[in-house]
Every structure is written in C-alpha cells, then in structure tokens.
Length: 397
Ligand SMILES: *[C@@H]1O[C@H](CO)[C@@H](O)[C@H](O)[C@H]1NC(C)=O
Ligand SMILES: *[C@@H]1O[C@H](CO)[C@@H](O)[C@H](O)[C@H]1NC(C)=O
Ligand SMILES: *[C@@H]1O[C@H](CO)[C@@H](O)[C@H](O)[C@H]1NC(C)=O
Image (cartoon, rainbow, N blue to C red; front, side):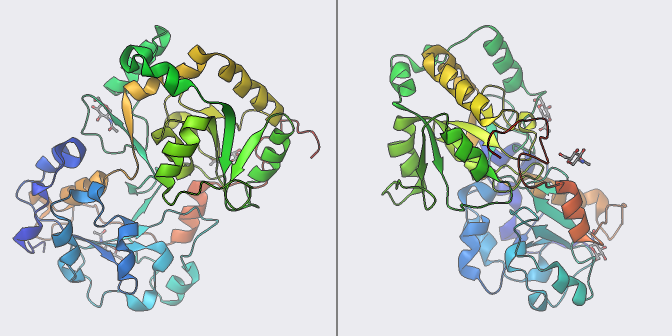
C-alpha cells in the first residue's frame, strides 16, 4: 500500500522552474522521497549530487537529506562504488524501488557483483541509473539545456533531434550563420588562441589505448599535456578556473579521450571543454552524434592520428571555420550534472493515484543478473584502434 510520508518532502514545491519544474507539476499532491543510502560515507553525499543545486532544487536540499528513514521512502539509491550488502536497510516495502547508481564503466567499477550473489539477493535492484540510455534512469555526466523553449525534456544527456533548438541550429548551420552576430566585437577575441591542442590526463595507461593514439598524434602536431602524465600544471586549485583562465584562452581543441570504450560512456572529459569554451576532440565508444550537436566536437575515432592532425590544423587556419564549431552555443547551454528529472517522473508515475492501494500495474521489475546486463549493454571494446577500427592504418603500431 502506498502511503504518504511527511508533507515537508513534497516534491511539487521544487524549482528551479527552468530545470525540473514542468515535469513536477504533474506530481501535485503526491509525496516522493528519495534517499541516497550510504550509511558509512555520509560525508560524501555531495559527490552523489544530493544537496547539489541541480538535483531537486535548492530549497529542499536540507529536508531531503534529513530523511534518513529508508522504509519511508519511495526509492533508495545505492551508489555502486560504496555498496555493502551487509549494510542495507533492515526493512523493505514491496512498493519501494531500489536503484543501482553507477557512473563508472563496467571496466572500472567498485561494485562487488560477487558479494551480492553470495548475499543471496540477485534481484536486489529494481532500477538502474547510469550514463547508459538502456538504464531505467539515465544519469549522464552532462547534458544540453536548450536556451529557449523546451524545458520539459527528460533526458538532457541525449540530443533531442525533434526539439526546436536542434531544428533551428541545423537551419543556422545551413544558412552559414556566424556567432559574431550575438557575440559582437568580443567574438574575434574569443576565437583567438595561440595554441592548437591540449590534453589533460592522469591515467597514463588505459584499456582504450588512447595514449598510443596520442603518441602518434604528437609526431604530427604539438600536443600540450597537463596533469600527471605530462609536464604542464595548471597551478590553480579548481578545475573550472584551470579551464577559464589557462586552457580556454590558450587552446582551440581539447582531447576528450575516454579511458574505456563503452557505449554511451561520455564523461566530463567531453562536457567540461564544451562548457568552458573549447572544442572537444572526442575518442570513445559512444555514438557521439546521438549526444552532441554536429560541429560542436571533432571525432577522432574515425580518423588516423595523421588525418586528425591535418583536420585540426585546417580548421584552426580559418577563424570563420573554427568559429562555426561554437555556433551551437547560441542554442544550448551545458549542464554539468543534469537534474534528476527522470527519476522523479518515473517514481511519480509509479505512485500516481491510479496505482495506489497496492495495485500492481505490471510495472514491477528487478535485475536478476545485473552484471551480465551491464556488460552486455555497454559492449565495451579494448585496445584501440585495432579491434574496433580495423580499417584504420596506424604507422608504427
Ligand atoms: C523533444 O522535443 C520535443 C519538442 O519540444 C518534445 O515534445 C519531446 O518530448 C522531446 N523529447 C524528449 C525525449 O525529451
Ligand atoms: C523490486 O524488486 C523486488 C525483488 O527484489 C520485487 O519483489 C519488487 O516487487 C520490486 N518492486 C518494484 C516496484 O519493481
Ligand atoms: C558491439 O561492438 C562491436 C564492435 O564495435 C560491434 O561490431 C557490434 O555490432 C556491437 N554489438 C552490439 C550489440 O551493439
């Protein structure tokens, strides 16, 4: 039986309206509580976006995070990395949804799949919440928010190709529009950057083999490397300032090379440069055209290092052409951690008045084998480029 908990947690009071607002109007009169279950590392809840401005609106953060009684919630979210089967809530109502949250690819994951099997609960999780679109709730590293209209979309991590922003953007591209119309005289200064390409990296050897690609790229063009695998340091505490003060004024392109090649796995490596005024050169297992607008990024996976070096230099030679890689900024803004509208919407449809009183509308689900589901949807490959792109010729490999 669905039952209201405490009125102070009514989600319908949430804002900001531009973010989750319209979705939540649907939920008037309903009560919904989300709990991030992490009894051990309470201090880290910031990291899982509870108490983050974007999650459920500023005003309610304190109250939501005070809700510490797991059986009173409609959903409990377990962060994969910290999951401890011996520390699960003692009571579980059948209506409650247990959600598995993971931001990591299957290759790099602290979740002890073995432990949960030993624990004898292979169907423990009802929903999944990850960067992958096959998840019940998509939880991407970033998303695009249209600057006008259309605020009610559910999955900002995927490009909405039927949306107004996309249509207008394609028309602007076709019409040869230039950003300078809105940026005015600052436009030339924005595009002016002395160097071509930068890479910021801290894992020097990866299963994607990106370092092999970059080594060859360096034979054709200069790549400045920041972080523990390179010689340069930002000397600035915050990553945002490193982008705005050091990288953005200096470099045209940023190597957004993922350490794993898995479907939909697009991390902050691509979103941060987009957000801070650089053009990412992407390398990963995702179909980027489903996620980012055309001419907002350069795809390295379809090019050899030599082809990429030539391509980047030819774009950089023409301020007009380089400027077109920023035209999308007129239509969208990048949201670093998009709000959790989808989980709200799904929970509300689960507990909407029609489904009250224990009526089972066939919506119940759980994952009998989480591990095999997660590996199969990701279809990760390793050892770029030979396995994934056998048609590309690489010198010196
Ligand atoms: C995409 O945009 C259209 C038009 O605004 C909207 O009706 C639709 O719901 C959006 N799709 C998604 C998945 O958000
Ligand atoms: C959640 O999964 C459990 C099995 O672990 C199942 O008994 C329950 O009905 C499921 N609930 C929903 C809402 O899907
Ligand atoms: C998995 O990836 C391989 C190699 O990229 C591809 O050939 C195959 O079609 C993919 N499988 C699925 C189910 O998408």
